[in-house]
Image 1 (cartoon, helix red, strand yellow):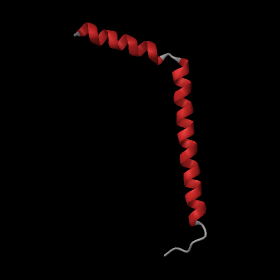
Image 2 (cartoon, helix red, strand yellow):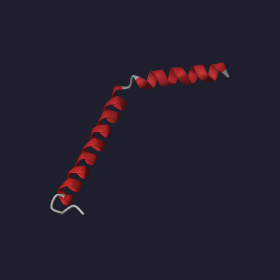
Image 3 (tube, helix red, strand yellow):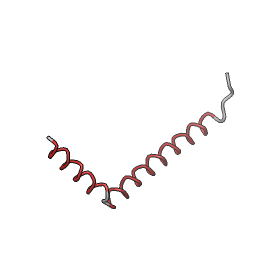
Image 4 (cartoon, helix red, strand yellow):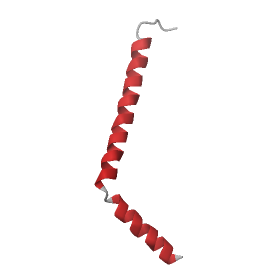
Length: 53
């Protein structure tokens, strides 16, 4: 059992140093942030001309 856990930890440590995966993660995060900011901007623009109830 300990050998399996050790093998998984070694594999995880090796994968964490992958620069392509890191760049892809940042790219996805920035893309999602941009999408959410655009949606929030559209919501504010849509509600800007209405009176409050």
